[in-house]
Image (cartoon, rainbow, N blue to C red; front, top):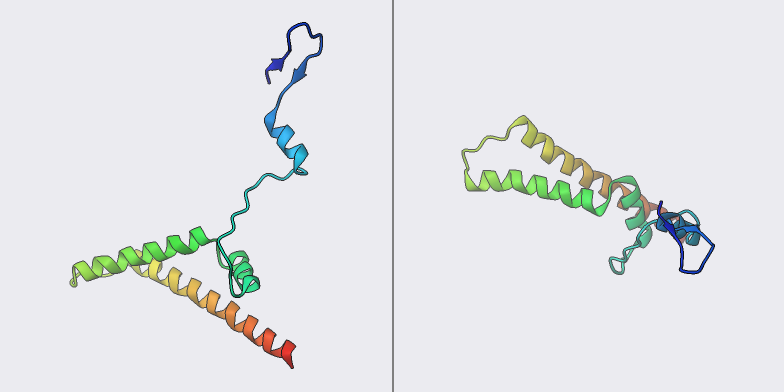
Length: 113
């Protein structure tokens, strides 16, 4: 780490911006992103924790969309085993999300009784 010294000063201090930042925020470093209001923030938080981040969800949608676009462009295109796995991963992810939503709805109905 470089040493910083002002002219006519006998004080030396090492400047490390990473330790300076972590001292300010209690040893946490991160970025919060607000993506707007959700009608069910608890469900959304659970989906992100249990199923995957927005990036992972979008990535799987994109992968599956590319597989389907190949079939649309060339109807004789046969799905490879890897293509089928890509589609299966997206289906599994959607089923996980649906299960979380259904459980949340059941729990909410039970609380209202």
